[in-house]
Length: 74
Image (cartoon, rainbow, N blue to C red; front, side, top):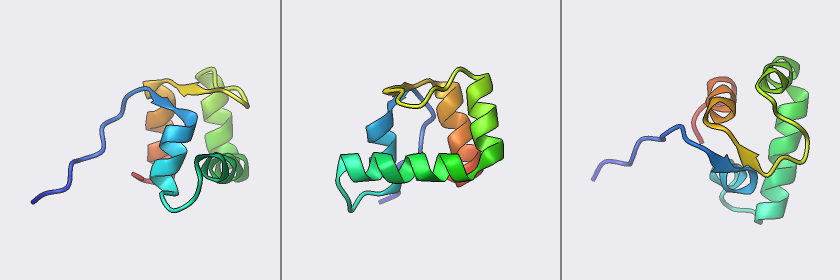
């Protein structure tokens, strides 16, 4: 059986975070994803161009696409 390919779409921030960190709580996963976004200055800058703000609960498909381009598929 083949694993389903990741599809870029709108995601809840915690939902996407848990895809990157499936073995920790949603809150911890969100905190860790936030750390990764802050560390990657270029990604952070590009996300802000597309309207990303700290504390945002819903990521647009374009924001998700940027994150996946920089961090790889979850």
